Image (cartoon, rainbow, N blue to C red; front, side, top):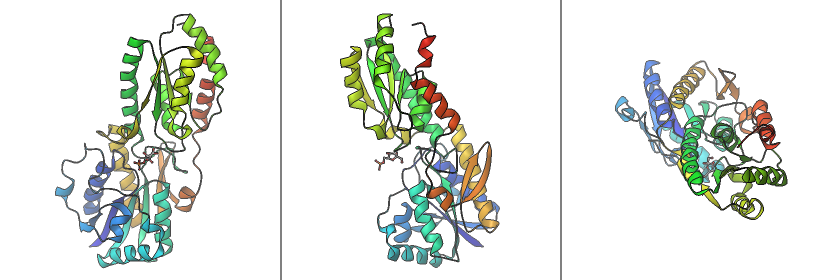
Length: 330
Ligand code: F6P
């Protein structure tokens, strides 16, 4: 039997366990022996590699996080550790490795691929940030968005009861995707993300007018990379004249029961990864665009900057241009 391994690297996402389950089951279907690597590239260096069986993935589909743990590895930047990692894979007779992670993990995978001829690598974009070039969807994003939605709906209850402005900070590293989609789908009044310039003075005029006309509370979504949540809350107090609070959603965005969409995407991503490896692809990332899957070279994914989809950006710009207030009655 041919051996195939999988590891999770970088920030965990809900849907990784669903991917592990599909990995084990589909590997057996294809006549492969599945292996787990624990703790990402760290575990690869430390030979934390073991054979996986059906019982390892029983009952995990509904759990967030990853059963095989994850890590961010500094040692992996050094060639001597990558050599150790490759030799560990070889010692188990592993011919294929699937990496669930973000662009940093794919850069590591690319190095491994460049340094070995005998092993095939496939990446599955997995990050709540949704910031990987070449794919419009990364595993875990839908669950994160649903968690943000639940949190915003709850915050709205207290914001309306007290008549306060709430500044809600979402994760996303340098990418405003989570903040933008959350603002558009949760009825926020303000959305600040790095991709779209904004002018708080314009907001001030509209918000003051709305307040005079009876608006009792505001919901503002701010992307973490702006590091602007506290200042924005102060701005609400000083310039709009409304008491404000900040809620940093933090790591709750990374956990929780994976949505149906993420479970299905986990299933499909893994299926395409294994199919690609068996078809002889040595180094690719499974990407999802316009409703379909394709496999792209790692360098076209890991070393390019992700741009938020242009239609979404257009909606975000309209949002910031405050077009909606022209017709809104409070
Ligand atoms: O990349 C995923 C992510 O959750 C980012 O949104 C966030 O900036 C970062 O990881 C947090 O990293 P850590 O879990 O190491 O604090």
